[in-house]
Image 1 (cartoon, rainbow over the protein chains, first blue to last red):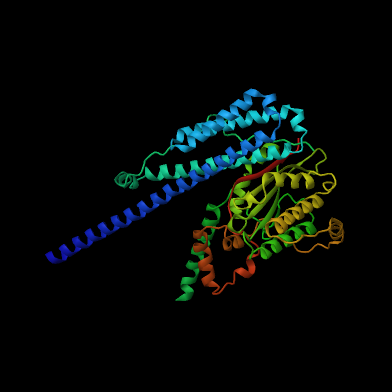
Image 2 (tube, rainbow over the protein chains, first blue to last red):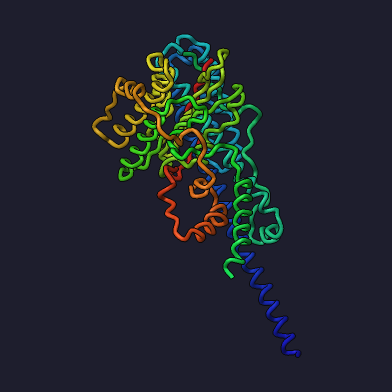
Length: 195
Length: 265
């Protein structure tokens, strides 16, 4: 009788330990997957930011006479590009977000200058320029959205029971920051064409 | 024994079928069985829809063995009540939901129509989304030029069927010649116009979403949809041969927001 009871208790303990072990492994792997997803989405933002950074350089040189027409905008673009170049060499995410916002604002202002300047709008490359800017900002908006969705999934998962218990054990961060821009800075410029 | 178990088994299948169907309702319509053309606004002639489908199938097949092959061009039309309703359609979400192109080699073109004062449908916005890999070939500049020269060009836009087909042919030219290095891609819009006028309509599957059954067989449904509905059903009918009834489908591609917008002022 005692032997049977002991065997039952041992079996129950084994089942509990095995279940806990499986739960731990599955939970850990799931958190790793979510963490990696964030890394890949972050990398995607970096790719898009770099594309935009390169593209701005091409745009500024393509829009002939920009410096004469709008010294302030030209300066703003130059300083935004410098801020991005400095931020990207470090690992400070807040600085990169700030540089992202600066470049977005500079681009919006550039568009305003270009639209108001008949000499530039009359040029053949104007519509292509608008397409490139609009598309680039749209792609960046999607990359930011994907990143934030990945962070949301991770943050929600890591705070749920029982993961909240072993997330600490394995050193997972419990509240990763979102890619937050100032109001309006992440809006895709609207492009309206007349026939 | 088998007869007694049959009814509860069928009820179970029916319950799973209903639950999985209603729990996975997407915000966007599923693609049509033709896949390459989804004329939800009903603005295209059947001859045009067939042309788009045939060209889509041909491109996908011919590009299979090429580098960056498996390209798919998918066109969809939607009718909206107001301009602000267009915001309810996210081209990236639709692209991803329809999984266009092998290895992200896809193009999605969306046309939005609205009723004008004369109660006829008028094109109010065009959107194009390219897959991640397709971005390098069809840049926003190129897409902008193609759309402006076809959809918004008076030479073609007196009839939407003509302008949309012209756009398709231009996209195909770009892909066949510049991506897959064909010597040329020849087409004749006069020949297409004659074909349009002489076409005799037949049974059609390009204007409404695919049936629930085909949806469950398709890659758009989730694993659980398939498990709980298709598997028991397949067991019931023993051997299905689903590929024979599937029709066209997406290659599994994804996109990241690259593309263009055109709105009529």
